Image (cartoon, rainbow, N blue to C red; front, side, top):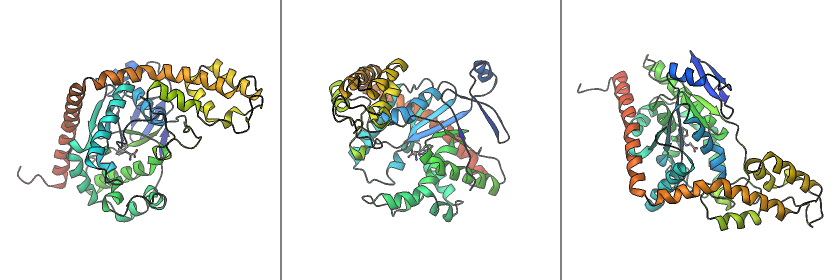
Length: 369
Ligand code: TRP
């Protein structure tokens, strides 16, 4: 399988895309005119509902989505069926996790006026396309999928020996090509799935001799990697996360307890900022002057780790405050939130219904027409 992904720098624009030759331009000049002249490219991405989002989710994917929604025709969705491939979540859990995640999306700035937000399991057409794509997907493509092999080796506490888990990328392909997406913003870990999607789309078009599905590109965005409070990868299972809508006191306390450069045992020991996760956070949350100041202060032992963390706490709280306020406001208006999501899901479904009519027609399944 040929691997092809385009790196999309933050703020970049997708322009002039024709016959498989795509260009990404980092220049935003004149983009407004261009967009009004050409139809906007369609972008689609999804997240499995894991509940409240942490700062890694915010800076890794969500901020990127929020930026993209201004330039592209974006579809973002909750991949709740995908969550069931690895977890037999209790019914209450998955339900709560879906709404927690949606509230965080909206609080952070995903705007239903600018993009289409929907819930996968409420657009049943995904299941039908998944079934049909399953008929044309060779088994070896799924068996050699690196994420399948890796997760089977790495994850022991879950039962991954089920049919749905093997078919995970087929469902993902259905999600993507249902909306004829041109670009799929994802992290590196998802590249094999986008590659499989491309293969499946090509195979469908080839077998049925009709260009029904565009072949989508992965959009790899360079995002800062935010370590967890203990310096390892931020992950719920490690219990080292900072959540985006956590109360101020909790954030303050977690940052104060955060790991620092182990070489700084005493206040006057000089340190290496790059060895401290606190510094990785400064690079995201603090002004360039403050970043320079704490780096220099750490190297020369002019400031202690607590001083350094206090500056960080101030900046993190300032950045998260509007998100927390928005979340409180939304929680007071759940009926409205549910209605918005229902309307948004209806919008997505109307696109899916059209695609499925075309697919059934192509295959010869519109029996009663
Ligand atoms: N597999 C993705 C993840 O775990 C979630 C996902 C499901 C997705 N369907 C998708 C992402 C379609 C992009 C496009 O992150």
